[in-house]
Length: 137
Image 1 (tube, rainbow, N blue to C red):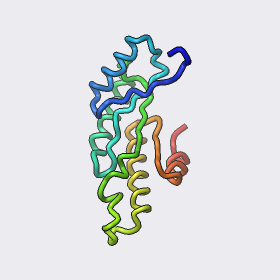
Image 2: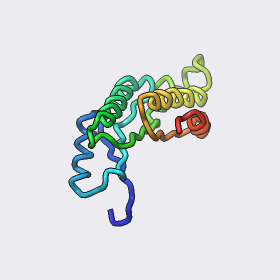
Image 3: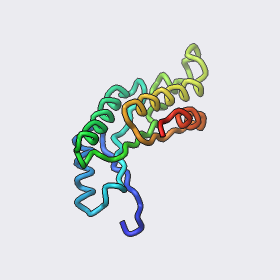
């Protein structure tokens, strides 16, 4: 806190745990404008539907006046690469594994942005370009 750093409040994909993490951080005196919510992002085929609903619920609660959830949301897209469909090199019929992994991450990123994420973390540089070019500013 002495040096003004921001904090990423990571919590398992659960809206109540995200809120509790923010409550505990506020109890330490950390200003709310220095907190990002990271609710854990499941990749496409690996829990994306649940991720989408949690991010959307966090965003809606924050917009409805819940001060503990009215913070920017960060989604790390790394789990998209863990899905078997994205990384199984033995499935030659599915095409190039690098292209599949990139597309898997990109699809996850689009869904997170649609759910209301403010910041996404990508592993593939082409996805940084693709997703960054079409985000809302």
